[in-house]
Length: 607
Image 1 (cartoon, one colour):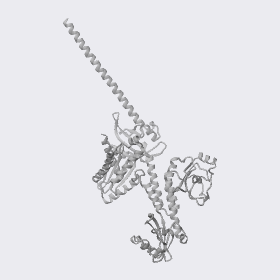
Image 2 (cartoon, helix red, strand yellow; image 1 turned 60 degrees about the horizontal axis):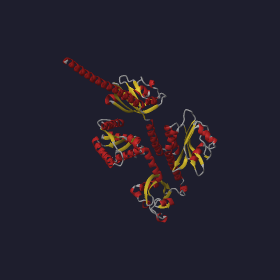
Image 3 (cartoon, one colour; image 1 turned 30 degrees about the vertical axis):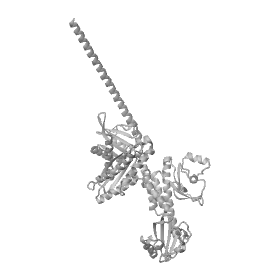
Image 4 (cartoon, helix red, strand yellow; image 1 turned 120 degrees about the vertical axis):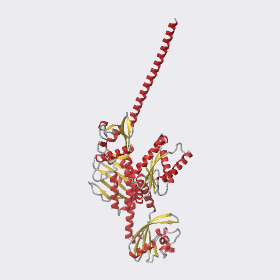
């Protein structure tokens, strides 16, 4: 009986042990199933992120260089299907003439740095060349080594840079050309860099006579029209409406049916014209046209022409004023009755003989003509002697060689007045034509700002900033002096845009631009590279001194954040690079180093 009780007890214990093991096995199986589900979900999420990425992503085998996979954005970028990409060499996505160069550069970066951060070009299936920014690194996928490259299409960024540079070139043309014809040719060349402009013309409008003329007209089919009274041509339509017009065949037909226009010259496929305005006053029309179905214009081209039209109008107006001034110098007798400009006549000893009302108005308020006639030129304009211009005016009388100079005077009523003074010999004495160019100078200053300054942050724009950087680097090489740069990225700008709106994001960029300008020396260069990136160039500055400069920026940022004015805090990542005369480096190399250091700083924040 006792034996039977023990046996029952053993059986119960064994049964309990068996049930415990079964429970453990069930737990293990459940854990395995959950792990597999999590793994599958992770794979699906990874695949989704890969496929839905807005940037093109390519995976390549580091051994043979063949593309192993790509996402949908890559297909869109290259205008190819996946099967036309996968299995082909990485070099096949670049223009043939540059493919080997890119391959060598990227291979060197991967071997030395383990990563690539470069600009390059790709070629689409249709043969279009596109600029891209490439970031690539060696990683593992499914336990296998793979090179992952992220390609960002920077076509729009390049176009913006080109547009800003074009504005600068138009501004420079006003200084570098001798006459309107040369200026028009320069404008044509600049527009031709922005869009097809084989057929291009500039029409000028005279409101007083209600006529239009065509001083510059290049067309593959038609000759330049003669000046005419304002009629129903398409050019006159833009003048009447004061608005840009993109006239496709459909728009042409509609305007003709409404009797808004009449066809003058050979019918075209597309016609695009924008008004030229000075202070909201129409002075003419800038137009391009196409006779080919293969060349069509779009709203993008309308926006480009509209953007440059103000600068074009300004330089045309300036050149026209300059030419008018030269003509007036040749006709002194007519000029005496010309109200817009001042005229002063001096004898051989430079005593004032005659002064018109405009010239009198440039003297201190309350001055009477009888009080100044007979006075020496240095009594009328005391600064002349200090500036040694008196000697130059005397030389005009002695040699008969005319002189032109820009000057600034302080008027008791109008403040600083910018004047253009043309001096020439009249008989045995001196004649001065004085033109108030204050408004023109203000316009030029605005034009220079548009060509060199980032309109949002008011620091230098990318194109001009990098141009000055290059010059400073050349100077550092020549003087064998040090130079440092700092690459800055605004952290979390996308989150601020997404949470508080792009206007708030713009305010952050303005604030950062203010931090940088206030913290830097007068000789330092502050520019916005684009987006949320800035660049500082510190001439004759070692990297240790640059670190100290960063401390001033950091303090301004900290002061702002401490005030708690905004519901977010501004955070900046930065990286330095130093030019040492003992180790030659280019602009691109220094930027790449600073960018890499900035990226390391940014990564360290997320660890």
